[in-house]
Amino acid sequence: NAGVTQTPKFQVLKTGQSMTLQCAQDMNHEYMSWYRQDPGMGLRLIHYSVGAGITDQGEVPNGYNVSRSTTEDFPLRLLSAAPSQTSVYFCASSREEYTGELFFGEGSRLTVL
Amino acid sequence: GQNIDQPTEMTATEGAIVQINCTYQTSGFNGLFWYQQHAGEAPTFLSYNVLDGLEEKGRFSSFLSRSKGYSYLLLKELQMKDSASYLCAFSDRGSTLGRLYFGRGTQLTVWP
Image 1 (cartoon, rainbow over the protein chains, first blue to last red):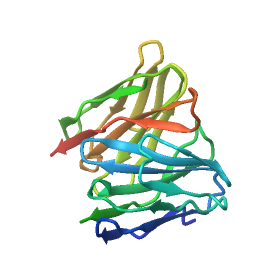
Image 2 (image 1 turned 45 degrees about the vertical axis):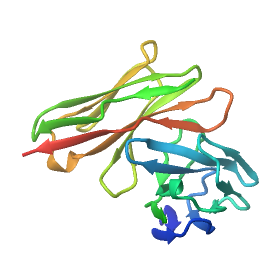
Image 3 (image 1 turned 180 degrees about the horizontal axis):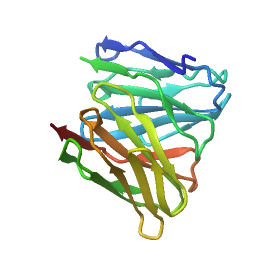
């Protein structure tokens, strides 16, 4: 089983550029989410989805967009990159919304110059 | 609002026992998770507590007291490979769906 697959693993952007972080899971999980992790800040929820066609905002949604057209895929779009979005991004999925163990992708390290 | 707190750093020696504490505040508590994260890697699940008491899983145990808003992760027979960040998180039904709130993590260093 591949689990949760994120691409790319590393990316450097210039301020104002846009890009999409891809996330796919093959465990048939309904719940998927995106977190960012910054030094000293812990993991903060950006957006999440409880099923295909359903998404909602987390703690830090500004500057990011998501969609969930299939159960498997949950891409995260940066609309106009800013240096404050330099971070490590993790996609995660779980079988259940509240009680399920989160399975994380390997992470995507993004630098915005 | 929601709040979660854990120590920033801890150190211990190989073979010892260490307890990492976590306190939280929320109105819609559902359960308490512990994750382990090695440097440069993704977090991996360690434990989940929904009821008060101690859950034991090999060298790792996790305790929960819902009335006190308190949990701890107990690591026994420490090994060098246990050097990692340990993340406490709670799930909150509240008025929003599907949120898992993470603490900032406790960086554990195990010395030989």
